[in-house]
Image 1: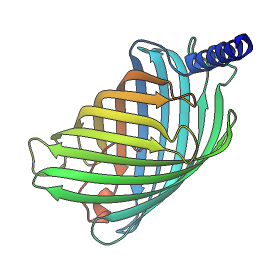
Image 2 (image 1 turned 45 degrees about the horizontal axis):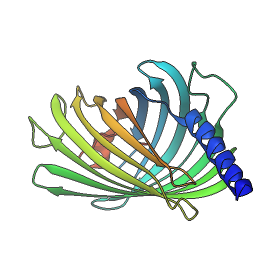
Image 3 (image 1 turned 180 degrees about the vertical axis):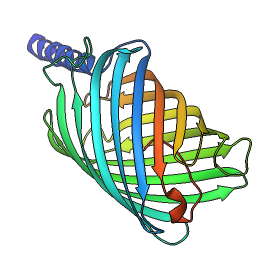
Length: 242
């Protein structure tokens, strides 16, 4: 019995040590820069870069950059194929090595949109193939429902205020099957046809392989650039790519 107890304590201590690398207490920052170029009604390309910190503009320990190509089907359906690099470092210090996880990721995405009055609803389904340094190859499946509501105009166009609220669920085909959840509440302003600023609060829930939950709150800032999006013939729904 003592041997099993010692092993359990050792495993728990190891987990808590690894989990502490991922996030700490306090409010963090989540900073996003994204750009999209639309060629015509069907094709577009986009890219995004992020850095995240464990404290307010301090202890930066995460970055990512990614790019993809999108295709619009008629009406309200679009797909995206993308890939990127994702790095998680130590939770204290700024980009302090060694890496906790160094990851290359490929993903495919389907987006369905519909309007209920002024409410613009976006249903996003994503499948990820993750090549991680900490756990090898892993699959992940994500669903996000995002509600965007313009305030001073019927749709989002230059000089429009709007709100954005979403919830995103992350599941895998391995334990823990329920891996992560994100809740975002924010407000944005579209300055002109090319630039939008979106800021808000995001709560990230993580579930470990030992089914031990953890939470982290961030203040998220999104700088969103879009060029020639009018060529798509669709309403604009500016939100974070990630």
